[in-house]
Image 1: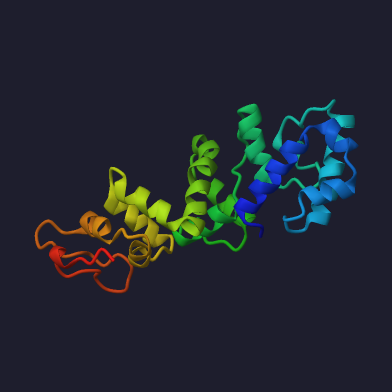
Image 2 (image 1 turned 180 degrees about the horizontal axis):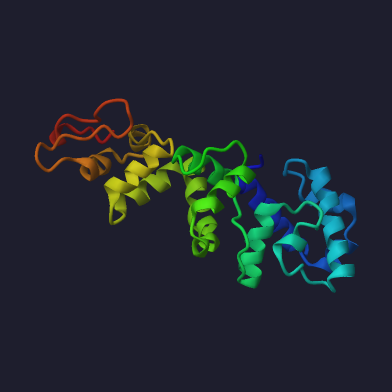
Length: 222
């Protein structure tokens, strides 16, 4: 699984090179492979990109296929990307694009009980109202990325949002050790204030490892 930041860097290199069908067709496999060198399974992906560009040029007159089923006939395109592209490009949603972040989080939240992203998609579509299918990827992927890769950033967002206790509770359910991250990013006071009981000013156990502080005045911001 290639990290999101690495994928983003590879995409910027492709965009700078010229990411359109004819330019990709004219680009040698060797040059294309070098552009995506940091991405996992780059040899396979180089072939997929070249094959997909050829199909788009010869079968679809240089445009992308108009629906998810036809998008999935392109080399290297699976359900996740097909449903996302269909929704964004054609404002049509025939399925939910589920990535590894969504798969992990929805199992943690017990919204599904699945072993693969594709099984998560099938289960999710079984109960989520269809009118919500188009927005769920947009709402959850960024959260999943930050929970995994930018813990200080997402913890600060949770603390500063309109319902911080609920937001921190969500982060806990998604596996974040909020106390550990608060100490690491100097957010202990702010975190304590979010979950402090008004009656006894005792902090709730937010991470399963016991209270952070016993009294508000005893909070150590370090």
